[in-house]
Amino acid sequence: MFRTLTENMMASPQISLADIDEAAALGIKMIVNNRPDGEEPGQLAGAEIEAAAKQNGIAYRAIPVGHAGFSEPQITAMAEALDIVDGPVLAYCRSGTRSTFLWALARASQGGSSENLAEQAAAAGYDISPIRPAMDILSAKAK
Image (tube, rainbow, N blue to C red):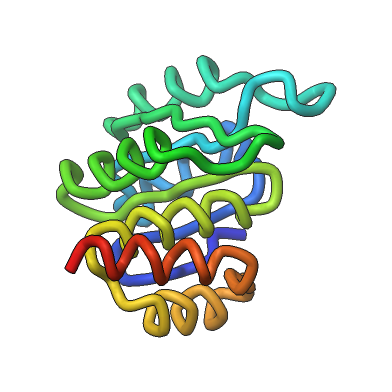
């Protein structure tokens, strides 16, 4: 269920409490929740995931991305989260796509190559072509 984007970054659809045990076994150091609470009936609340993550010694960040799309504060928050953790990160949303998009935008904002990021996302089964123009702008601005 966890898809590997890079050695230190994984994306996933909505996770369960059991998935947190698996994440801990894989050495995940931070879980990033990109899903707003209440997006879907029966969805596990972020507070429950946060508590389970902390019980497993995993840091937790909530950077929800709703239907309005991505904003600069979300991109900055994701970049900061990725920069402070020393080890693998698991980001999740409903399907893993928003998490992958936010990771790619964050890395592009730090000067990452849009082409390399697109290749890494594609290898994990995610198509980031809808955000390529934004990534190109962010990457160019960072350089």
